[in-house]
Image (tube, rainbow, N blue to C red; front, top):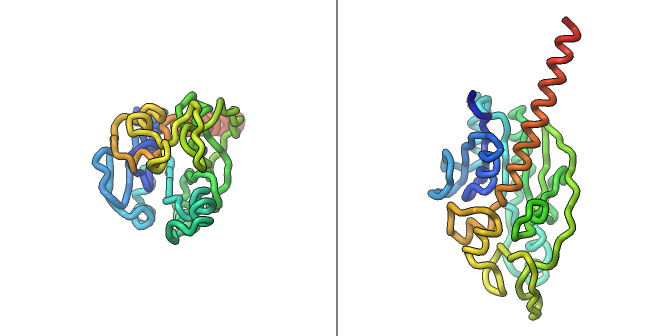
Amino acid sequence: MSRPLVLDLFCCAGGAAAGYHAAGFDVLGVDIVDRPRYPFRFVRAEALSYLDRLTRGGGIRAFSLIHTSPPCQAGCALTQGTNRAMGWGRDHEQLIPDLRELLDRTGLPYVIEQPNGSAPVRKDVTLCGEMFGLGVIRHRNFELRGWTTPRPVHVKHRGRVRGWRHGVYHDGPYVAAYGDGGGKAKVAEMQAAMGIDWTDVREELTEAIPPAYTAWLGRAFLAAAANRAGRLSAIVRSAA
């Protein structure tokens, strides 16, 4: 029996892909730059253009689900908070409205992932490393379209993220898997904390979703699809 196929747009190094694969999917990743460490089938392309071509050509019908992790800098909490207050950084294009329009055109169920901040996404599901016993907090919000699942309870954190904050060092059970300096995690610490061992590129690790998140989402999607199929089957039987 063939496995359902996920289209993984803006795939980076494959943290999301590994979770979906563990849940029972095959994966095709798409990113605008080469990702030689991506552990599954990969296409180098601009994600929105590739999605448009797939939809127009009918190739999108090969997929059961679309996962998207568009660049988050335009709406993430760091850009909107500290960086803006300090005059750091630069302007970033917000891709989500155009992306959502293209996704709606496919007629497929999909996921849009973003960190906390002002990005224009619904927070249908919010996941956190503590829910899975990980060594990072890494809150991520997921907008679900074309399918639903109960929102999990946010588990209380066991302490602080380890590192320097405003000149004060704090210890804690979680590592800071972002940025560099100031007590941020080393590459090996990030790999262990997130459950990612196929890349040692710091930039890829700092942007990655822990695979546990999408393993949970993937299993929830398959359970929802099975429930829907069961209801339809019951309706058909009752009408026969």
